[in-house]
Structure formats: structure tokens, C-alpha cells
Image 1 (cartoon, helix red, strand yellow):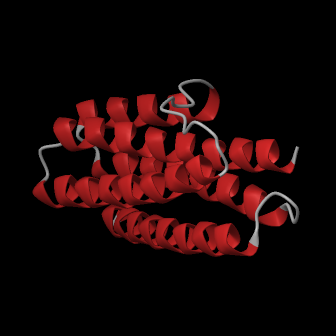
Image 2: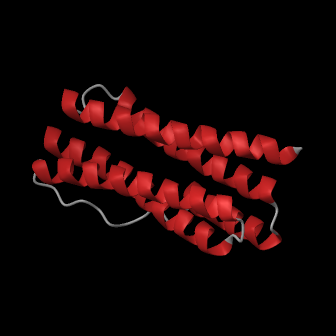
Length: 150
């Protein structure tokens, strides 16, 4: 039972990272701003690394890492907002939409970290480290967004 819960929680985080990779791939292709392309490509790399680490943990527990996304609900709307903002070329709106997506990813990580029984100590360290990396990405987006208001 514990293994199933752990696999479920880790796969939920894998889905978040799949969403980030897919969303930022789209954003990087759609933007003409070189600094945003570089930023979005870096965020994709962060999520690919997170996904790889989480997948290894899922396999250790005999599970199958998910390759799906959460292409419904809030995450889908976030990336549609990003795509719409990109089409208008509005830097502030693009970054605002990205920050909202980052907020959702961080929320998902916090929820997993708050569940005491879902992860062992090693997994908790991995997830906390990933949370910290995603928080740094969030803060970069927020700073750029705030600078774009001016």
C-alpha cells in the first residue's frame, strides 16, 4: 500500500514536470525574444532533470513512470494563456502567465512534501531539492515579470 501511494505521489510530480517541459517547449518556439527562449529552454532542462530523478524513484518501487501530462484544468489554461500572450507579444502578460504556472507547480510540490507518510527520507530530500529549483525558476519569472511592468 505504501509503495502505491509513493508511486502515485511521485507520478503526480512527474506529470507536473511533463507539463512544464511541454509548455516551455511551446513557449520557446513561439517567442521571438532571445532572452525568453533561453529562459524557457533552461526551465525545460530543470524539469527534464526532475522528471529523470522522479522516474528513477518510481522504478525503484516497481512502478511505471507516467509519460502523461495534466492536460486539463489549471495547467491547460495556464499554457493556453501563455500561448495567447505570445501571439500578442506582450512580455508582461507572457511572464505573468508563466508565473501562475510556476505557482501551480510549487503548490503541487508543497502538497506532496506536507504529506508525512508518502515519501521516505531520501525521496523527501529529492523532492525538496526539486522544489527549491522550481522556486528559483519561479523567482526568475517573477522578477522578469515585475521588470516588464515598467
